[in-house]
Image 1 (cartoon, rainbow, N blue to C red):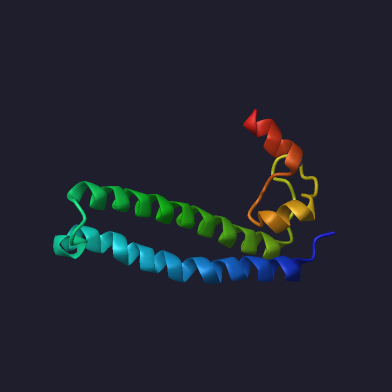
Image 2: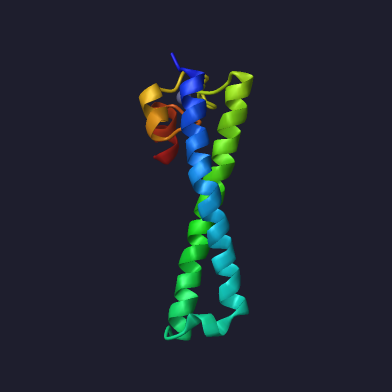
Length: 113
Ligand SMILES: [Zn+2]
């Protein structure tokens, strides 16, 4: 059985870590465009590469945040831990590692192959 309180806490903790770091990231990404002098010794190429990496990171964080918020609303509606594909319960050990998982292991594996 899944303990909703436990996972709510786990998810909330991830959000608490992600939100501030994403905001910092967004500010940085914006300032690269606005302020070329900030780049300093870095060549323009390096700066662009770094910007790409930061963009990729912030996209990943955005995706994870959306997943976390969806997980919270599934917790509220009592659907958390149910596989979206087959309706079986997702192994809590799997959720512990990846609290935003919406598929059980066998469905996830089937989708990958
Ligand atoms: Zn499944």
